[in-house]
Image (cartoon, rainbow, N blue to C red; front, side, top):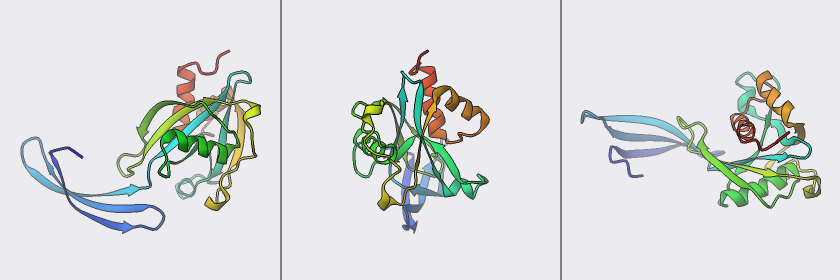
Length: 195
């Protein structure tokens, strides 16, 4: 933290139940030289990674479907969301973490992943930076049914969808997850799946 116009005055933990919600009071030196004191809440859940698995031969992608409570309480009637495979880093580097999450969630054991970019997904309130990966998959990489880690109470459905249909699902509103839309559009713009 090296912004000379920002000085953290106080950090108060509001919740440390699932992840950490902090109330941060800081002093901001404005352009005209005056100072103002502001308070903001920031949710710290750690950093994460996500991946689009694609198969050029079959023109398909691997996505997941699972219940997401925040979407349910904000109008998603079923609460189910179609997403790319994703998870928190849990003190691993992004590449190690996404390989672990891919095997846990999808059942595919991948070796070669390519980082394509990183992004803050909700910078107004969440500290998380998300690392975006792509990787080719094939049937011989399937080592289990996937479905998530039992100890983490995950109940994940693995979907193999044609790339064309996945893009159409963005337009129809069946896919509403931001990270998934970003990786599908990345694949389209960079011709990952040809023909």
